[in-house]
Length: 117
Image 1 (cartoon, helix red, strand yellow):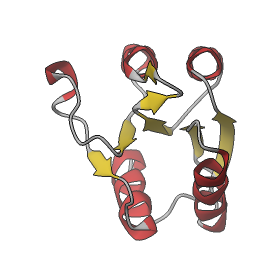
Image 2 (cartoon, rainbow, N blue to C red):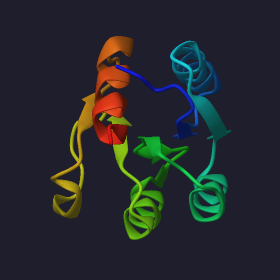
Image 3 (cartoon, one colour):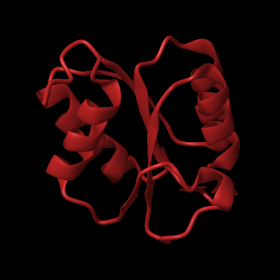
Image 4 (cartoon, one colour):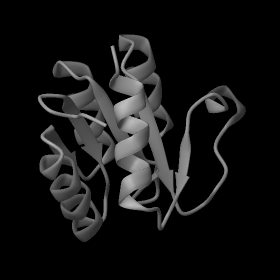
C-alpha cells in the first residue's frame, strides 16, 4: 500500500470525520485536498484540482454526494463512497462503498488499489 504523493480529495460534512480521514491519509504520505464540507465545495475542488483519487461522503448536510461523484467520474478520477446509509444509486454500482464506521485500513487499501499504476 502506497499513497505517497497522491492527491486525494476528501469530501465529508462532519468535521471530526474529515479530520480523521485527513490524518489517516497524511500518515500514508498522501496530500489531502480539502476537506470539502459541502456539496458546493466538493464540486469546486473536484472540478478545479488535479486529483489522483477521492473519498466522498454520500450525504453532505442533507445534500446528495452524487453530483460530486459524477464530476469525478467525468474527469476520470477514481473514488470511494463512504456512507452510513448503505445504498447508492444504480449508476454508481461499480464504485466501492465503505459503510461507516469503516476500518481506516480498508480505506487506505482501497485508495492504494485505485491509484496503483
